[in-house]
Length: 71
Image (cartoon, rainbow, N blue to C red; front, side, top):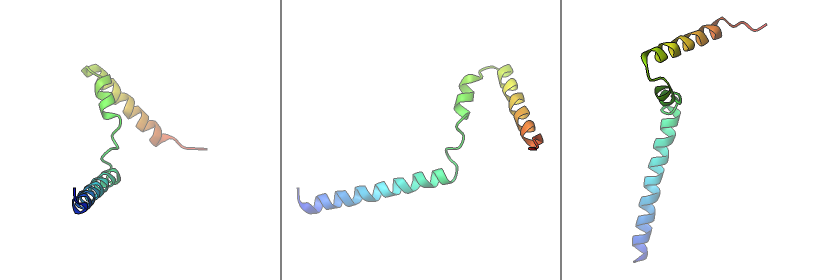
């Protein structure tokens, strides 16, 4: 292989890697990976009763956080 082919391949791979890094950082900044419990809860709660119980627990947590007044 000629050296120009290696330089072109290296340049193209660096360019594509930079694009991938930019896309990943943009996704992290915009909160694309913030929902860490979605898939865990989908596997944990299969039936309608379990989902209703989970919703009640979440609402209870939110109301306790809103009504909490530190001394």
